[in-house]
Length: 216
Ligand code: MD6
Ligand code: FE
Image (cartoon, rainbow, N blue to C red):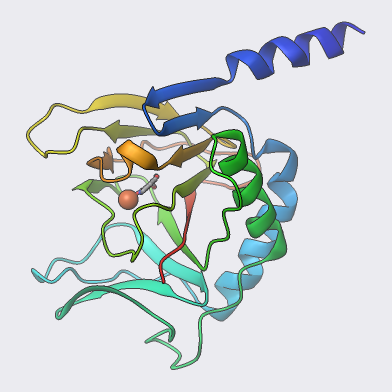
């Protein structure tokens, strides 16, 4: 009984609107954590993490991979989505059912119905890894949201405005937190501060982030 009351209260408190169109769902992915991590391990066995290079020639500190019909890549010639993993020459691994289900449920909760992603960028942060302020703008349709799932070590997420010059908010993202991001927030600048050392009992000394998108 007590647990039911507690769960109800924590669910109410667990949703926070970061900005119009951007919703933080605290702990939304926790009940799926093992299924998510199992599916993720299978994806990474086929398409390992790699450090991509920016068009400016910098090696990214975040290790990246993808699953889904399209994957996000960066190299000397630019940022884009493509169907083939350049490392293997094969299509990216399929989007696991649990990713699709979680993405649709989280999007629905945030007010975006029938979200069907075709791309999932997988980011691996090790201590010191960071992601500088950027906009996600390589997708075809900015009417579709992005669903971002955090697993493992906590990180400080920077959430800014529609121009780089606006000072960003700092938001602590923890294991199981989901951010849904669309509508008027879709082109907000955002980034991740350097990851601190630590150890997570299921994920180890790293943070994994899934961003599910409708890219094509
Ligand atoms: C990360 N996330 O949290 C990086 N992009 O590791 C992103 O770059 C991101 O969380 C678009 C929408 C949500 C995100
Ligand atoms: Fe992003």
